[in-house]
Length: 178
Image 1 (tube, helix red, strand yellow):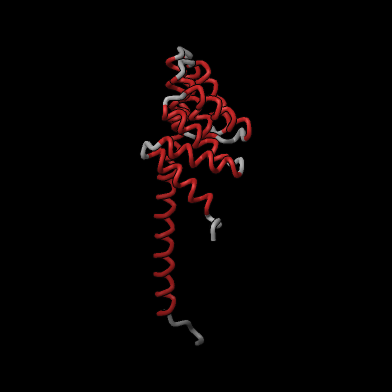
Image 2: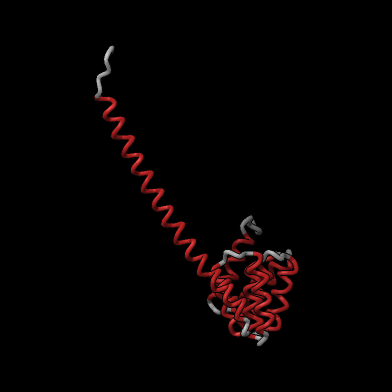
């Protein structure tokens, strides 16, 4: 079969591996091959990452903006666009991009932290404080939920043990009239 059904998955993996290995030209060839077949979001995003990692931040910006334009819920594209804007020296735009992404996905701890850091650098202390508090609260909530889950598990185990004890005792009781 010249065109296996998993070909796109393999090409995505190959492109990602090429990026990770620093083989930017090979990654570009893979992503462009996919885009020649179909307009696939991960290939557009991968091409943007390749431009960013190659130092071509203007091309990366255009690519990430295109991804967001085609799918405003592509949160990874917002993160990469913010990094790109930071590299281009436009910290205000980087903050705006992260703010938009944080509104779309308010429970992303690392994004809240990144927004806090860029807002702090922009001397927007109100946004920085809100974002850092949100990140801390998310971590705290997560810890609280884990502790609550542990507590529930412990109570469940106690109930199971209690039920086993009662069942064992019930079997050994002799009821009058039997």
